[in-house]
Length: 457
Image 1 (cartoon, helix red, strand yellow):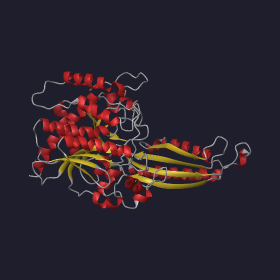
Image 2 (cartoon, rainbow, N blue to C red; image 1 turned 180 degrees about the vertical axis):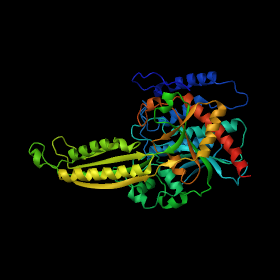
Image 3 (tube, rainbow, N blue to C red; image 1 turned 135 degrees about the vertical axis):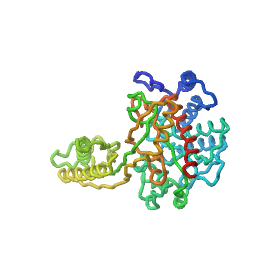
Image 4 (spheres, rainbow, N blue to C red; image 1 turned 90 degrees about the vertical axis):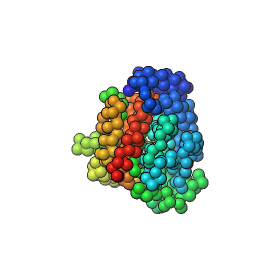
């Protein structure tokens, strides 16, 4: 596994030096690999070029990407990927929700497809690797198959989902929830962004038809299995020197929108004891949430307030309204929901004591998911055969694979994140490590293509 560069305080892999990185890592990867006989190896330079191209869409040129869900920028990324799919000979389709799917035919059209994919959207000021790694990995697997002249028995689908990040509408994995039937027509009006734009309106603005949401849903046998390659967004793999993470469980999350309602008053003319300050009440609630989540009995619970909107947001005015969002996660669904309820109780108590109003809304709720053991073992067997170091771990972040696992077998394969950084411009994973992940993915697809056929007689 390639080691991350020393922490110099600067971005370890600036876009300006991407071509140099690609060339050096391509050479290092090939030099470190045992001589291949007939095995097709991933091309690090190709992976780097695809990642670089996508980072230019809504990127600032210095590592930060702000490509939010269901925006023109996200659609542009999907168009670029669709072009790459077509260049590889895939049949490309875009469903009514905007998910882009490229299909490589198999020898047997009667078999369900194998799937590889992830997402192309980002959080505001996010990184260049989250999600996109899984999409370009799928494209590289197709290239390896065609270069080797191999045709699978099963069709192979490379899937780029819409709106995995919950940054815009407060709910994550919108595209994958649409295909499993978890997103309902009522959600098109219920979910809205900070500007009040509903999910349905956002779809219409991009010439997508929200009325066709039912047509997006997959049949239960749409895929025989789905694999998602993703950066870890944690520190375990790097700290332990492991190349691959095999995800056992993906945390669930409950997302709340809280609005504290006070009164706008002059900052100089209003005595402290008569104020109804929405921001100080919100601040007490936020600190209370942190303390609550750190209680030992919560174990694996995490809770985050990552956004506050203050009104009127004036230096000389006592804040009258604060809207903020709480993201509660846990691999234990009971603890997750208990913590969310305790947070609501805490907010109500603070609001009552401070004489301010409180409005609360649950904007998202997903249960934890345990991914199927047999599929994870298939990936483990491939790692053992290839001599690739690995470990089993859980994911605190949500993923499209966890949503699909409610309908069909799904597995997640992690590659290391430098210092665990993610959702920030400093997010970085070496191209050599990504290439290792693609190699594992490629051989897993080959193993599944044969193994599933044998199991089905």
